[in-house]
Length: 268
Length: 164
View (cartoon, rainbow over the protein chains, first blue to last red):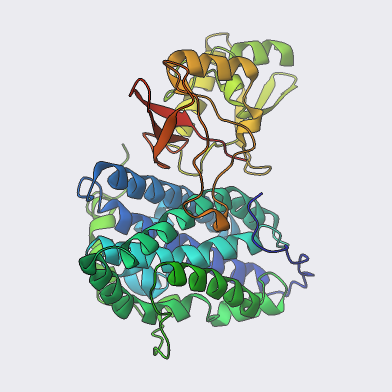
């Protein structure tokens, strides 16, 4: 398949009594991340610059929504408290959400959305490649499924960064501005939270240093083709994975959760 | 008592709601059928994670079996091994082309990171059979399709993309 580098040997799992609860928290973090980015992309539906790219963003949103559902279903099963995928998505408040700050950032213009997507895709694609050979069977199965889709996403956003960066004066100005706004959220993706550190220690998650190298190598190649400088020395914001979000998430959830909050238990 | 063979025959009648010319067997999404006494188990796998057709397909399977008086049915969703267009039947590929959708060209799964702006897969126009076509967008009317156009007859068409 579409591997860029050899697959690492599966980690030796050494679960502790805390592992199931940590796995629940981590799967929920993955679910929140996919859902929030899917929601942001779906806001473009009907507003894309051209029809084909409107469809592309809707397609990517749908892939991410499907991935989010797989994680939420698995999280509900891991928790075993009777909560469903819908309860987890619709009835948790912003401080309970565990997505990194990047994915909740507003769409801005098309270049802003592309840069946000590119930063995320670099991380997402390479993470899934690792997770699909991890020791947790269900997490590996979801990753195996989703990585095929993430491959389409990273190709799409990489090509757009190149088109915009090496495009017109205006497109370049916009993509540079977007990088200036968004690069500060890249670091959180590969900065392990307490939960992720514990799962790394237990062999359930890969070490993030080699992951970061793969991400950097791909990003460097794209930036070079886009004739854009790789951003350097940027102070990295974090907090989303610990529930400390920007003001944007509350507004997003107000819309996403409106129906279930207003009419609890409503079904199509 | 239902037999597994009978269940497979019934499943041939269930079509993909988004590509109605294909049965779910043509599409390769039924992974297993098991009968234990009165209890029937059908295992299906999604094409794409977010495919909205999966719920409809599960309902259609239930209705088709119900019409034969089979009520004890459990539908299982299996993610791994992940669905691939390699599982699409030869009959299914032919039906797709006749319907106006170019079937997957095997061995051309896109997405390789190094293949940025790489050459488009050569896809045959389902209308005039010309190979002079170009990719308009990797993302089409549904998750499983890309959008192509024929350079000879100018027909825009869907390509059921290779997913391996």
